[in-house]
Image (cartoon, rainbow, N blue to C red; front, side, top):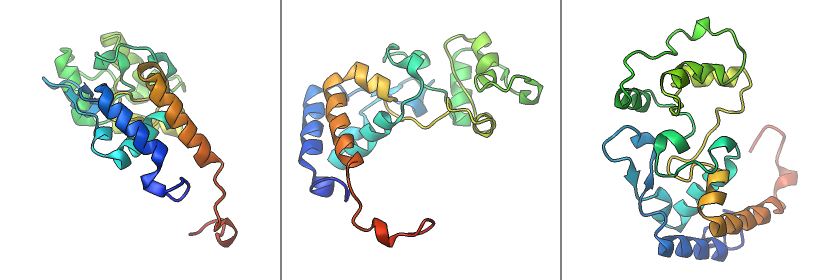
Length: 196
């Protein structure tokens, strides 16, 4: 909040929020943690207020991975969502697709060090579903896998999807983050390498 002019009351952020709210684009978007439920859509949490808007849109903007999903259909969770990490969501989606046994149960049997080897079993079972539970996510991270990274809970989930879904908002938040990147911390000289 300190690195933007007027902090959390920043004018450009407030204007971007207003435009997004008026557009109606975020009234009903896919929600990753609702995958496999009868209703997978919700009001984007970014629409709660301009502070949550800045936080949520920033999460999507800062997620620069999953580029193969950039132009995926924003109405089909199995096509546009990065890997699902929560076990309850994973079970629900597998049940929704009629998968009875998790093909990834024997992760120790996988020989490839590739990150996506963790997902191959489930991709064979249902080609468009990318699911991983926390154990496999940790295994992927321990292999220095950059493909298992944090993304937004509500669509758009990633930077590429934000650029595709709402180019005007993308350009606006990009400018805000440019401003943030040029901020000089006045307390930088007072901070130690490991502290405060």
